[in-house]
Amino acid sequence: MQRRSAPRWGWSEEEPGGSIDDQRPPVWRKRVITIGAAALAFVAGLTVTQISDAATRRRPNTGSAPCATATTKGPATGAATGSQKASPKASAGASAADAVDPAAGEVPKADQTAGDVAGGQQNGKNVTNHLGDGQVSGRPRWRRVNPNCPTPAPTNTGSGGATSVPSAGSSNGATLDTLGNDCSESRLQPHNGFQDAPRCVSTAFGEVSSQDKNPTLLIVRAPQRLRVGQAFTLQISTRNLVRDRFLGAAAGGYYLESAFLTPDGLTRGHFHTACRMLASTNAAPDPTVAPAFFVATEDKGGSGRPDTVTINVTGMPTTGTAQCASWAGDGSHRIPMMQKANEIPAFDSVKITVTN
Image 1 (cartoon, rainbow, N blue to C red):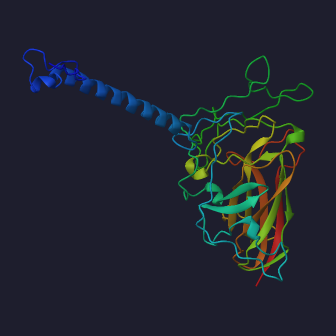
Image 2: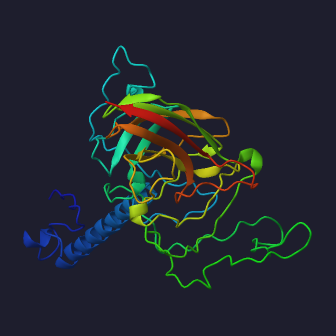
Image 3: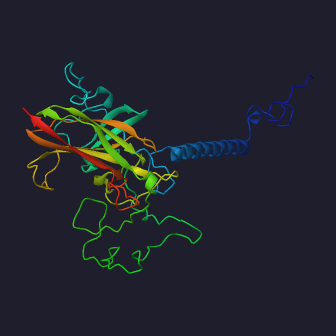
């Protein structure tokens, strides 16, 4: 009798008691195979999940923002929404300073107080202008402040460890009579990163750059005369300001973060541009009157060499004298500190006549 080869399950039809049912795998073997397949599927699924989770953790701008340090590069904090209309082209008879610049991106709407507008690509960087300096919750993609982050400690400046608050004194050794240097004796409530006052701000001033690297700013071009409602352009030049830090005030980032420098010793922050109508040119203006135009600009640009950023400004609402100003800010909107008291901060201002 010709012998048939054994089936792959390892038994022969010539075995005693063999039948069609006997040619099927035993029940216990089926269970072992089923359990093994399930285990392999679980391991494969767990591996894929871990890989996916690791990729998610590496993705920027997701989850809670990391606590800022002096050397950690902050994540991108703003992106243009693209919701605004493109800037109108300059008329043939208008000068460059009197008309908006299409290369400087969008012109904010006259009644727009929140959100972002694109500032075009300038100096090889994409410019973002935060309307109202982030004082209104108008953009969900703001970099939120992590409430679990402690106030950054002073920078280690030598082998002696972190720097401590020096005792006040003068060049002749006499002690200065100070009112204090923290909020321990203040009767005001602590400042919490929002625009509430009167409050006491306990955030440390932070890092100040050396004089040769102190930030400076200048309005290098502005119109002298405008018509009511006419959009126009300002050109702002900054030096020693790396424009990569902006904590939205409505997100609790106002006066919250200490000042920090780049590894090259330059101030990290952004700059502001605002225009307001003056009720009088012979008296200081009322501080409670909001400006007609206000943006905070970041573009991840800026270095030790001066460069220029163009800002398209919304037209002024009435006739009279408009004051337009621009000034640098650190990540929490304070004018950067200077090494010496006799330096001019990174601030500039011009006056513009507005007619019918």
